Each structure stands twice: as C-alpha cells, then as structure tokens.
Image 1 (cartoon, rainbow over the protein chains, first blue to last red):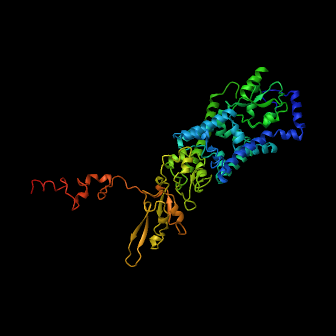
Image 2: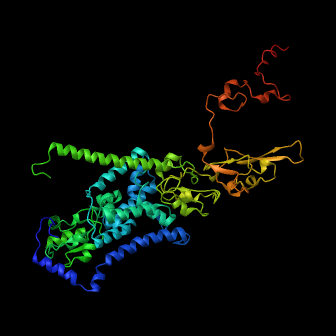
Image 3: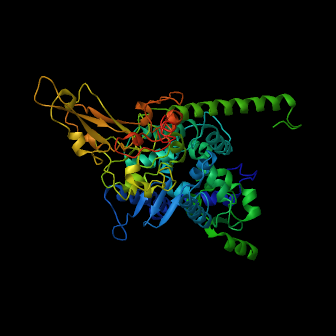
Length: 303
Length: 259
C-alpha cells in the first residue's frame, strides 16, 4: 500500500481503510454489485448460446436466437458477430475473409470500442469466472509468489499467435485456446477441455497470481490494445483520493492504478484495465467511478 | 536495473534468455498444432467443406453448422478427441447426412469453410462409400441390397450388378459404389444390417487411388488421352447400314475412280 508510485502513507489513508473495515453487511454486498452483474452477463450469454443449441430457443419465430459461440455467432438470424482475433489469425494463414466474417468483426469491434476495450475479459469471457475464483482463493489462502513473469509477455504471445498462424497454416491460438474450449464444450458437448481450465485454475492459484488473464492470454492482450480507445473508463478524482491503496489490492491488473499516472490523466488510461468495476465499488472515498471518456475530460477540466 | 545502465553482458544474457523462452514456447506450440491438425485424417466433414488444409485454416470453430443441422448429424470435436479440435464432423453409423436440398449447414457457415460454391447437395463429396466384400450380405449371395435401396442417389451412386450363378437358380446382385456420384452422406452405412457396417464412408484420400497420367488406356476410346489412337472417324461409321463416309481409313482410295 505504500509503494504506489512512491507515495508515503498519509494519515487520512488510514482513516479510509478503517472506513472500509467498519462498513456494514449491506454496504459489503453493495460493493459486490459489479461482480453480480458480471456473472449475470457471463452466464447469460452462455445461456443464450446453450438454449439456442439445446432447447431451440427462437426469436422472432422460427429464427434461432443466438447461434454459434464466442468465435462467431449470429443474433436473431440477422446480426453476425465474429471474434476479431480469430479472424485476424485466419487472415494470417493466408485465407481471404468472407464478407460475413468482416461484418461480424466490425460489429464486435464497434461494440467494444463503445463500451471500453477489455470489457470482454471481465464481462463476457467464461474463463474469467475460473481465474477470478483462483485469484480470490489465492488471496484468502495468502499464497506467496514463486515465479515472476512480466505482464508484457502476453503481447509476445499475441505476436506469436499471428506469426505461428502464418507459419503453420492454422489459426494458432484458436487451436489451443482455453477460452474457445470452455465455451465450445459447454455449448456443444464436453471433452477434455476442462483439464485446460483446471490447469489454468491451479496455475493462477499456486504458481502465478493472475497468471492466465493478467500475463499470458493473447486474447486479453488483443483487447488491451483495442481497449486503449474505449469509451467507458474508470474516472479518478484526485481531490478525494487518500492514497489508501485498497483499489490496487483488489485489482487484477494493479499496474493500471499507478497513482502518478492516475493523477496526471484523471482516469485509468491503460487498456489493460478490464472495467471489472472492483475498484469503483470498493473505494471508500468514491474517488474511482465509471464514466464516459468525454465526460471525464469535462469533469477534470472543471476541477 | 543497474544505475549506470545495462552492461553489454547483461544485455546479451537477457536477449539469450528471452530468445530461449520464445523458442521453447514456439516449439511446443507448433508441436501441439501439428499434432492436432494431423491427428486423424478420418473426419467426415459437412457438405461443401473445403479441402482438408483450407478447411483446417478457415473453420472458426463456431458450431453454427451444428446449430443449423435439422437432424443433429453434426458434432464439434471437443479437446482431447481423436479428430482435430473444435471442428464439425459426423459419424454416419450414428446419424448420417440426409442431404437437405437447401444445405442449411453450409449457409450457416460464416467463414466459407463450408463453401457457398456448392449449389446442389448432390454435388457434395463428403467421403466415399466402400464395401467390405467379405462381409457384405449381397456379395455372400443373399438378397440384401439395402444400401442400394436406401441410397438417395440409387442407380447412380450405388448400382446393382447381376451375376448369374452356375449352381443355383438365384443370381447374385452385387452392390457397386460409383465414386463419380457418391456424396458420402453415409445413409448406406447407417442402413447396413450387418453387426459392423459392411459398407462405410471414408474420406476420399483414405480409399481412392490414382493411376497416374503415364498410362494410356488405348481401348477406352472416349478418354482424352487416347485421342491419337482413334480412327479418323467415329466407330459408328462402321455400322453396316449407315452410309459409308468417304474418309474412313482404307476406304478412300478403294472407292475412288468408280471401280
């Protein structure tokens, strides 16, 4: 708590922490609001796919509601969606993308640019539920780090995914992606994909904190790059912040909460922020909150 | 980091470490991909599927073809299975392809891995039916022929060949698969009454040979390659009642001069 950008603990910071410890049950549950919402969207999307595949959910009549999975899908028989990274890998194998794929990619990219980039990771990706559980348990059991990897390694994995797609002629990440495995096997029938999830769980729990989502996943890296330009961001109010550092404790990507940068820019600028909302719900001073990027600028210029 | 900056040795060691890590990772990754992609070549793909290499590259593993199939024929291979991961396949002995004329699976494919160039479902070539002659009831002399009767392209994809027998009143009716018409739908395999199907669909490359261009089959006059050996005129010219054309070989000079 005292090494956030070299800041020393201030007396009012201790008061903030105290505030957090003394809040009642209601306030505690209220601080989980984004967690509930995220599980709702993650499971809801999964359910829409599952219901369409197994119970023939339709809307409008005779039109399947949501076909496919996170790699590519069609909503209401009308709106195509496609995973931009999967499409990019197919492109790198030297194959022409169809018009439907390109439209699908455009739809998905536009959506995530509007709501903020790594929203996919925290609000849609099913693996997030596994890694969140591992992270929570790791905090609870207070498991110490045994290895360190730079968080930038994911960008190299992303580059490797594209390079290997070109070299091997198949979409390199799609063929080994635990994200794809989990979604596909829940919707279309189980195999051994859950073993990959067990490995991720154990890796995150025992070996490297936030190991998969925060260090290795090339899909997360891709959305980090896109996320830089996202519209919904976490606003930082430097007048009320007491530098207690509780936000960075719950953040799965604590490097994005570097206080020096926060104070400079007035918002969480890094694309690696997944808009999970943990910090905004927890902050005892209300210094962190979701806002739209243009409004943040306005807010900060008034300050 | 050292205060005076990174020494040359540190830099070289760092670079070597990074390279080693990248190389090891990439090697394992490529190994995994090759294992997967080459896993087993026995997969039967949905109608219109591109050639194996292109199909492996373009299939985005979304399962919309599976959603679209009205007979639940198609499945996506899960991780750890025998076939390349995440892509659609079918097992005819469980549920064959019933050759929907509107080809909904192909239409559902967003990436063109199931090619929209397939206009007529009867032109699809998912595999080729092959008959185990030793265990086919018809080839044993029984009047089975179920595969022939069930075949959606009866008389084209599967034909019956009649063979009279010397020591029996009953002729043999041999089912024969014709590769130029067989779609590989597998309805025959599903229908075959033997305990293990005696007719089954396999990918073409598992069963089909290739004679090579250097063979000149002189007796098959209709083939391109034997053109040089054809008589100058079509054989029909030799029919007794037809008027003899003037340029049939050997005839031109004999009939000249009004002999």
